[in-house]
Length: 111
Image (cartoon, rainbow, N blue to C red; front, side, top):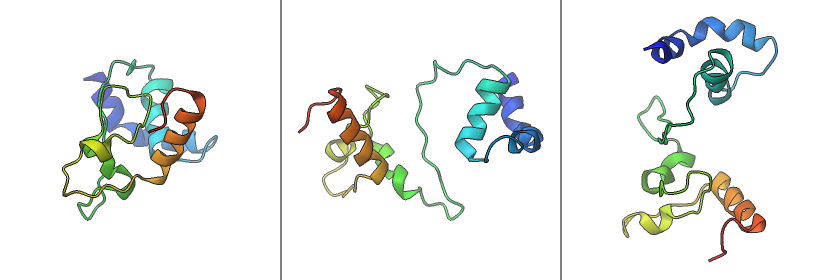
């Protein structure tokens, strides 16, 4: 309930935050919940897709529909393997970059 209140009242802290940082929604939310209110969210095992006002899922989040949740630290591009055969999933730029970093660091075997 306290986390829900912090989330719901997060706009009240925006002016002070904006004095020291550019407001990006994800970074601001993390600051409110974790840094300002000190809630522990490390136990959360969810992923989210951003939905636009039109009801469409953000194009760079589409792959999360079929993302393997086994290892949340890496984007292995497995959404392309797990998606139904009739669905063409273009791997978004962020996922391509992350996959390349994971291969370069040895965390992921190149396929």
